[in-house]
Image 1 (cartoon, one colour):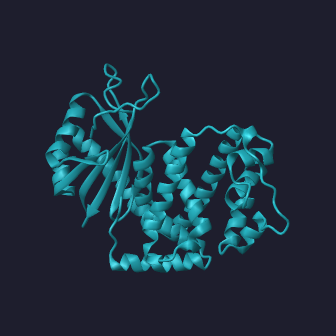
Image 2 (cartoon, rainbow, N blue to C red):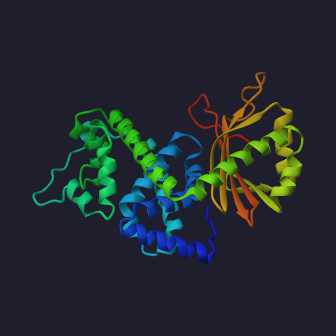
Image 3 (cartoon, rainbow, N blue to C red):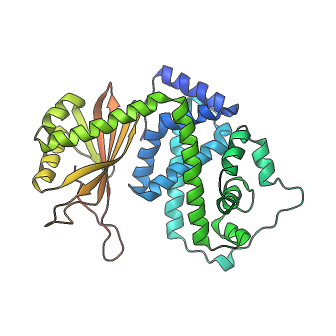
Length: 328
């Protein structure tokens, strides 16, 4: 999903990118926070709501940390970050389809004179912050993390498993824990540097709750009239389903069926907002709706002009995902 930035926003992106490339971690953290709604929207479009989308967001932050110097057009860092998320999401899908026996994967040896992970880290513009963050990991998490993200040759799960003498499943678990810890550290830096993002996210949480409460009072039409464009477009699965009338009918239909929504995660940018919801079905119809839905909203002058719904499907008995009709 693309976002259109003003010239002033592009100029600010360019300034932050150049600062990050000089080694200012706060600038990189601010970039990630500025573009997190768009990045999250891409992750949801590729993987749907769930832990895989969270992992991909953390992975993208680390890729940005390592490769911000590769950005050739600093003003276009937003599309670059979304591309990183898209590629990471596709890698997750490929990995899920692939089976690769550990015993059949050779572990390359490091040739004399090769650059070591320590040397890679030392040459990085953000090396002081990276080293401090890496040192904050437990020894069990630190080695797999350094091999995965800073080694030149021992980067696959199978190779790391051999190097650390642990099962592949343990490698995945430890990398996930390390990514989450590093992502939290990076976001804490952003929180310190950018109070505006935190305030905007808090306001969006309140708006999500108010929207659902108004819908239960029968006032969803008023909310849509106040906050949505007259020609708002409703999308699902990459297709346009309709407009305002379908949006209202969908919400009314779910409420009449006893379905309720509960916000569990909110991301708020200036032009893109993502609300992730749990769907709570009535006890007499537990399969009425999928378990969750993400509202991906683009804004034009503060009003929602496009709403894309992305559902968490129910698993089928044959292991395939159910092809559910979209709900609001």
